[in-house]
Length: 184
Image (tube, rainbow, N blue to C red; front, side):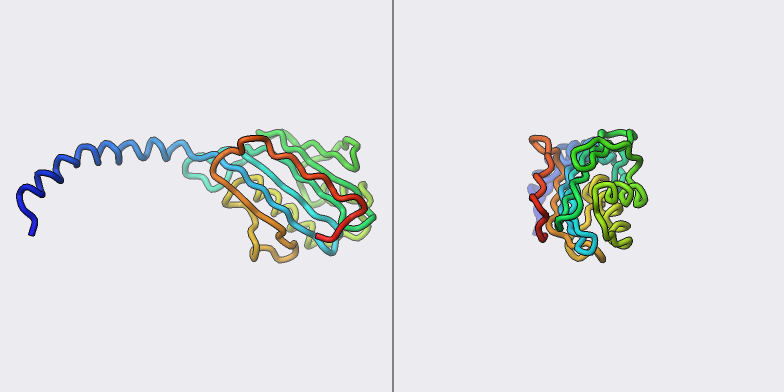
């Protein structure tokens, strides 16, 4: 049974508890920083895709539209070359590089991805894999709630997928593409 002494002791902690609870919304209102990193394989189209992004998700939002990061596509067969995109952040268009040559690419769309892959020498591209590649990369760049995890992909193979609600300690850089194409 609770005594009057228990009540007095507990009531001394109420102001501290109320102060801590009132500060909680101020902390939560700022949102959170994030980084994501994923590797995916498109077996029919003959490439792997590495995507990394970081940014800030505002309070009350699920994703961000002001990310920066990269997408790198490497061939898994001898035909095709490296295709990379750098997303500088904000609303700026991505910077495309196709087989080590700067390209005048456009936005991150399925049509633009297909155009850049064909310019890099990819011969057989699967439309379903390209559609999913655009969505998977866009999701990973937009934050932890957008990254495609194992079991969530219909056409691409998820090789790895990681995320954290902090910024990386050092910028994440694309891995080197294997020479001559390799199986994922």
